[in-house]
Amino acid sequence: MATKILLPRLGESVEEAVIGKWCKEIGDTVARGDVIAELETAKAMMELESPAKGVLLAVFAENGQTVQMGELVAIVGKAGEDWKAELAAELAKAEQTVAPTLTNEEPRQTTSQQPIASAVEKRSEVRIAPNAKRVAEDLGIDWTQIPVEAGITRITSEIVKAYAESLKGAFAPDQLPGQRVALTKVQSITAKRMTESTQNIPQFSVSMDVEADAMNAFIQAQKEKSAGKITVTAVLMWAVASALKQHPRLNARFDAHTDAVFEYQDINLAVAAAAPEGLFVPVVHDVPALEPDQIAARLLELAEDVRNGKLKYEDSVGATFTISNLGMKCVRNFTPIIDPSQTAILGVGGMHTELALDSDGKVYSRKMINLTIAADHRALDGMAVAEFLITLKNLLQNL
Image 1 (cartoon, rainbow, N blue to C red):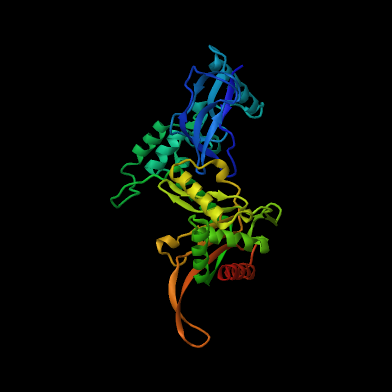
Image 2: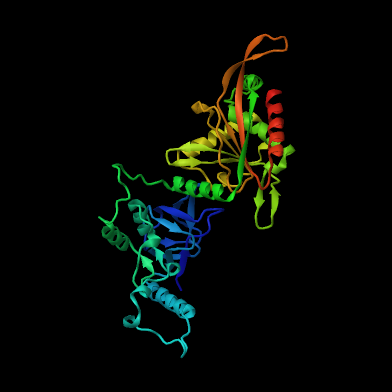
């Protein structure tokens, strides 16, 4: 019997993937564990392996097509096997299993007996093909509002286009001239995650200015000692990891199901990294075990992977706290948005010079940097966040 290959669950919050390319063609022999396709998700590149040996009999998605978790993507079986008949038999059996039982009190209505209003299927019973969904997004159409006749349970691209044609002249959603720019897969997933965060998490922020002269001196000393490139972000991660040890509530997530805060045992820091495709958030695991030069080297490796589109899945998951640094873009301060799996995120502004008075009343200049924590108010209050920032400030000013 042929084996159906469905898109598996690819990780936390990953519900879909794009077929990057098929590594096998129809008719090719495959062994169990062979990579048959490369998948692109918002987090990383992944591989789809065959769960059985045999011949690749069919594929149901093209290169570049978005596939939902659990959707049929390929079939592997014996050469010449009639997989179509097997699939049709399974579908018929499934329909028979879920079909409602008709009783004498509930006679079946014919199409001619049904009013026009009932000719539209319930929305819960209607699905949309991945290609059709992309067409709807490009045309700015809410596909859930497309009326379909009774018996149609899958909206195709043709149905979407026909509906779009019917709307011409009825209204003009875009009154001003311009162009529609589709989001990349990374941008689309980011949009969904940030919407989830702002809708479900009561967020607040606390900012603090920190003297950065000691940090600059430390960075210069580290460069001379290790001959490596030590960055502000690497030193911040090193200090943040130390501060999180003392304030574990910020290295956690709020569990709404149990009404409790789950404090992570490990300290894995994610760093927001921009790329042409959108925002990636690679993760450095077990940061307390690393020295600043090791953190800096790891950041360089991850940045290279992001630029080349080769960020591995294991380097994109497991974060317990996130740092977003916009200082290199001359941003003084900003408030980032929390990842739904965490209780806090640190926004880092750029260094700037300001004048101050010393204990003798003399004017001197000093470097300053602004740090802003956005926090989940279900797990944290303002005092807890302020105490964390004080700890972080002391660490950075006494390096």
